[in-house]
Each structure stands twice: as structure tokens, then as C-alpha cells.
Amino acid sequence: MGKRTRIINDPSYLVPLLRTFGSRTHKRIFDALSSKWMTKAEIDEFMGADSSKSLHILKKAGLLESQWRVPEAGQKPSKEYHSSYSKVQVNFQCSFEDLSDIIMLTFKPYEEVKDAMEELEKLVEEGNTSMSNLTRTLNRNPFYICAVARRSERLSVMGQRLKVIEDVEENYD
Image 1 (cartoon, rainbow, N blue to C red):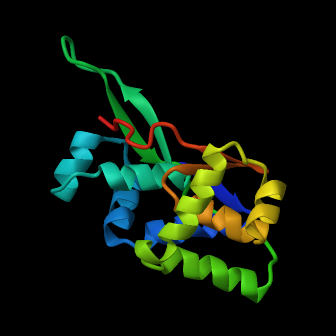
Image 2 (image 1 turned 120 degrees about the vertical axis):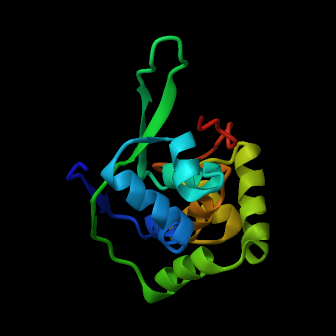
């Protein structure tokens, strides 16, 4: 495994990380991919179940890299996956209020955060993608908005803008 370090300077990045490592399934897949490259079929066999959701979550958290495996003669090429990082360095400062909001958003059941995610997704789809505009419209701070966006499977944070992820159901085969 590479010795790359994931540097976290924004507390909202904790949302996908905590959601990833709060699941035994996602953690087990991450650990397996830390030691070797595996195709989705190999991961499915290792887990005994479909790994598409875990791969999507690992990719959205920025913890997954992929490459094409050179096939045997007459076979189709397939994507293989590996963990991107082996270490993490966290360096940020925020209020306990902001941190508690981020942690609450991370671990609340989907039904309890669904309305906030849908409202943010709707605004972004309507073209309101600027963080400063969204903070004014929703009367929330940027940490909260980023945390909600990182919890959503349909939104991506791109600097000071939010973007709708077009192809949520990516093919991991």
C-alpha cells in the first residue's frame, strides 16, 4: 500500500469518513483494498454480497482509486480498486457548535436529515451553487451546508460551489 496521507483542513470532510468507518462492511472493504488491488467481482466474492454501495461511499469519501486490469487474451478489461490513503492528518478549527452539528448530521438516520438534503439538492439543481448564496438562502453556516452536501449521495462540494453528481449509479464492474 502507498504511504499517502489524507490531509483534512475542513471539518465537513469528517462526514464521509465517519460514515465510512462507522460501517463494518465499508471498513472491511477499505481494509481489504489497503493491501491489494481487487475488481468488484473479487470484492463481492470476498464479502459474499454486492459491494456497489460501499465502493460508491469510498469513492465519494475520496478513499478509492481505480485502474483498468489488463485482461487475459479474449477477456474484457475490468476495473480494479485500491485504497488511496494509509494515513490521515487532521488540522482544522471550528466551534463546538459547528462540530456537534457535523457529528449529528453524520450519524442521524437518513429520515431525520432527508429534508435538509432534499432542500439543498433542489436549490443546487435550480442553479444556486455558490456557498455564499446558499448560506444566505438557508440561513446556515458553510460548515453545515458542506456537511449536508457531503452526506448527500447526489451532491459534491467543489471548493466554494456545490455540484449535482449526474451519475450516482456508477457501474463499478
